[in-house]
Image (tube, rainbow, N blue to C red; front, top):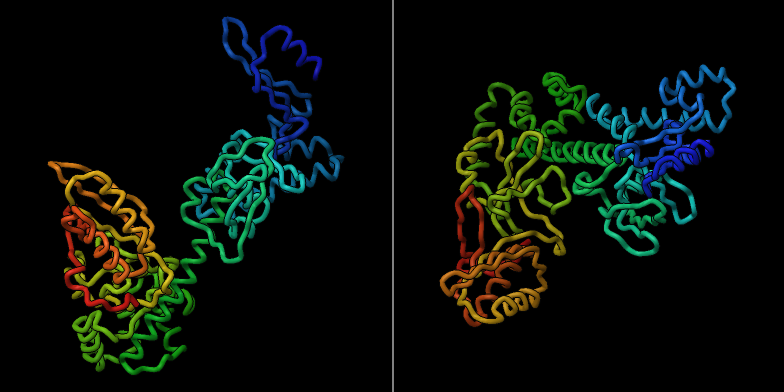
Length: 457
């Protein structure tokens, strides 16, 4: 075969870095061949593939036919390699949400180019071209991938979305407290990594939906002074087409089943007025201080989302609304978008803040001031003194006026107000306001003038 390759390269000019030896390092499906690209007649680029009859039969007919051709005489190591590839295919199928996803993943893994990288111990790992450290981590083990917090390539720290190249030695740094990020799905290249991440979020969302649904039902039963009857709840679950209580709670927590529908099944017909009275009372007293509700415990709960239209902060009065498939969406009680929902007891959920003091929330402020030198420097220094991180900013000059929009990471409403007061004290600053987006309209809310100075908890 090397003689054939030498003849080809003597007749035509080979292209550098376009030679691949799939004999020394076969593909996962045991495909073997020598590939070389050369400049052929009339300047056209040709790809030359050189392989034996046995290799060609395997490439053209497939693994099963190859086994039959060998009549059971394949070496144990070769059989193990075949079996591993087939097991990987089964894993893709089990992790895929649908048959379409499985076929897409299979096409990706069969037809993409590969690179060869190493573990710190020298183990060779074959990866698709343009793979990232996250892909590598999942290729080693699912638990390593799920708990990846950083990566080193050649002994140097790199970002988790950086591209790997053949010959790289990758070290994965893990943490027991680390969890996958949805951002990983935007850059991972391998089907294994993508499916494992999606599976994690499906399971996490289900668990959180069950917990949230249980809390909602228990709160509703307590309001009606009813005891939690497991047998009755199981009958209700069956009546709604759910096989068990867990499935029922998950449907409630995800917003697919209104909790009031469940309560009506549990309460006798003559107590219907009691249900309506309780629901009306809850709407009337919404977000009143001291009222018990579902606890909003930060940004890591997949089934609790913070509305982008009003960007609530700890310290804001809030209310929640069940959204099908997404759990509870948290709004400020003064958000214009909730006016049409307040009268709907099937969607409205009472909520309260329960946020650790080190949790960060994004908020937007607008600074308006006189155009002068070093104004932006003074503003950013003032923000930094309040231990606030600037996520993004947009500063423009118009008619001798400077207008800057800032996205800041703050702990709560009280923290934001301290930042606003600090910026207002800067020379040339005319106004600082909290900025909310309500549809396409900008709503400027001046909280500094009305804030009472209470804690954001």
